[in-house]
Image (cartoon, rainbow, N blue to C red; front, side, top):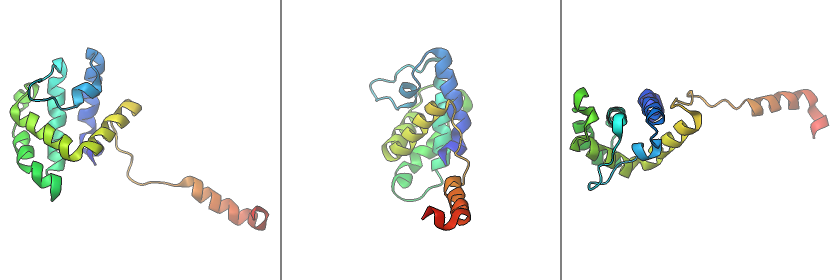
Length: 145
């Protein structure tokens, strides 16, 4: 779901990192309190990713969703002009998202790097090999057994 909601933002951040010579993984990961880190010209693109992820995870209920609800709400209120700054609202939201939803975010990051862009899988899984096998099994019948 994250790829379908935030694919454009993640792809824009990835291209910005490539253009600026930054490591996409280092830029995407949350920074510690003591080390804000330099995202350079990609800080606004990173802020857009954080706000998009917060918006898409805001609708969930229970567990990590409830734990991050307030931080996500604050991140959604960050203005367009403040996306480039390392605002406390974005930093807290991003840290909470990585704490509770680290696995899907890592998968999003790795998949985007592997494909060169972040795009959803397309929804339905189509197992054409099994369908073809069933078709030929019916045609060849006893010869395959």
